[in-house]
Length: 170
Image 1: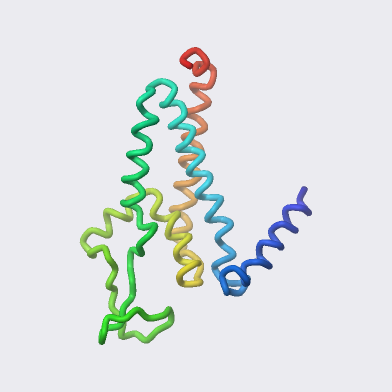
Image 2: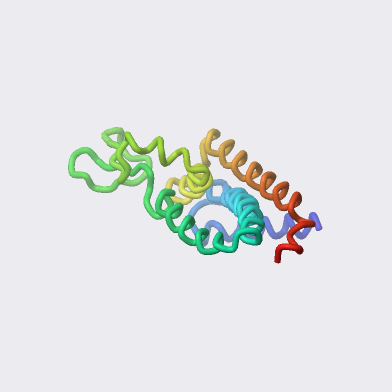
């Protein structure tokens, strides 16, 4: 089992330069951990939603509304911070000169509210390797790990508590 896992990981690392035009040593290889964090978070939240859906049937309709709102409140399709040149406002590439200003679509006074979102750290762990080719920061890594394993733990404990009672409410 261990050999097959290591050969699968080797295959993924070998394909990354082709897919992302980056070296295997860059932050892009970190996406495997990002995906694991995302799946753990989704599994934990899904377990809680499953139990709530059994007891309260209207939850299935609310989940779609909540996820749509959550999607727009999480900087997924737009960057939290975008760097632009001071002179003409044109987009510049990473590693550009220091004459840069932070011109993201979200004003500075509201960014703290977006960072409270539990999915912010997980999404930033995807953004940083893909857009910048760098590893996530230590605080993003720790926050994403805590969110992932925290939601997985809470979700599985919550589901385990109601596991034997669910059959009577279906």
